[in-house]
Length: 388
Image: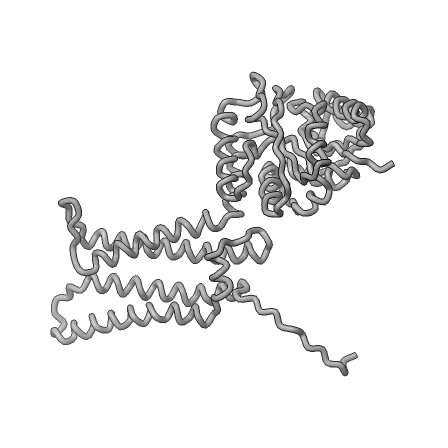
């Protein structure tokens, strides 16, 4: 008989609670009349966890590579069910509540995630730092960057179809596996359901490091979102610097009774250069992400990818470069004409320097972006009919 539901649990020295989790899952499957299995992904336990799992009838899969995600990758790969439910083996999730996760899958949903924040968190189950700061902030960032629309992106109890798992193409081996699953489910346009659950205090020692694992989630999300990491900050800095430079080019600027002069112009030039450099890095990162299938760009970036060519990039870079060079030439001519006297053309010299650097950056970035595959030209390969 084919297995309908596989319950997968990661395990690293959970002898105190593993048996309870397995029994709850197996008994619930039996009560629901579902042909199912429990797969324990052991991550190198040195206690009696493996013996307990085998004694209770669970199938044990050994994963020598340490990591939350690594354990799940091995366990899910070994699962045989059409539907897969995952949850920690520390008894913080209630495996008698499987029906709540199975029903949406049977009704056409691809991915079901529990929500502790919409459900009930028992006293002592979650530190206040995680409940009121860590989880809401990280979930909010994930929703902002990827529009996932979930309330508890790091809830460990989830369910999905086998087909949905294949579409998610998960790869990470650490705690960021939880974020990757939600992100990739969203990118794959899977039909997602959220169910409130009860979260229980764990028994035994927690393996979660709040700041290290929180940073891993944040780092992973930012690396998958070049638009928010590079493009938006870079564009804002570039425009702020450019406006400041142009505004101060004619002379000092009076705002609110205060005079803003050459020192502010120098700062504006630096902001403009910094922003432009970040912007170019963002275009490169976005291009690399697109070619690797990690991100789908917005309309502006898609426009750049469609219309940008090396030749257009070179022209775009040469225009400000030549303009800056001509301004410098005019300054040099004026200096020579004055008999090499005092040189006071600081503002146009700064502006010309800005144009030359921006042009140079654009030229070399055009080559680099083209090397990354912009544009990607697909040409048919001609085969010589006389070739063997």
